[in-house]
Amino acid sequence: MAMSVSDAVEEVIGEMQFLGLPFKYDLINLSSLARFIHADVERMVGKPVSIDAIIMAIRRAYKEMAWKEQKKMFDYASKCKLILRAGFFIVHLRPAPRLYTALLELEKTVNWAIGEKMYLLLRSDEITVVGNSKFLEPLLALVQKEEILSRQEEVTVLTVFYEPGALEVPGLMSFFTEQLAAHGITILGCFSTYHIASFVVHDADAAKAYDKLDKAIRRVQQRGLETSHDL
Image (tube, rainbow, N blue to C red):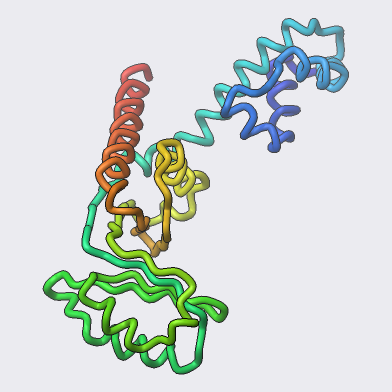
């Protein structure tokens, strides 16, 4: 059964997932793309179709597809909450069998009830420790100089709280990191759990990092309100 031009274009474009990023940044030459899929569209429609008609269908199809793909991510992003915590360090270490036990013992001294923080990221080939500055000296006392890959003091932890299930949504983490990267903010470390993600940044970038992410979230919230009014 013959299809409409819009349906045919939507089906063809839907199979070309690699175009997602170029479309997002408006890098696609629509005329070239229309000529590329011209034969497939005519075969599916069952009659001659002009290039201009295909270009118009591509524009409509992409807008609908982009909205469907992004809506769920934006729904989660719009509900995110931010917290900024200063007075941290981040140390990256070479792994050593004795260190795993020693670090776990050090972690037991952290009084979470009064807000003290220390996060251990243990890999078989690398260890990362992020914690309040008060734990830096006790940590350094446990390691040899040659075991330290990198050591950064005067860093801040920017933590994002999102609703359960957000990790299953493509693009959410990219939404956060793209905002930071776009404004020249270096991410010194990052880690996430079921509904929390944290980014370690230089103290000098902390206020800007919070401000840019907060504004991005507010823009998404406003977009959602505008869209709901249009429905």
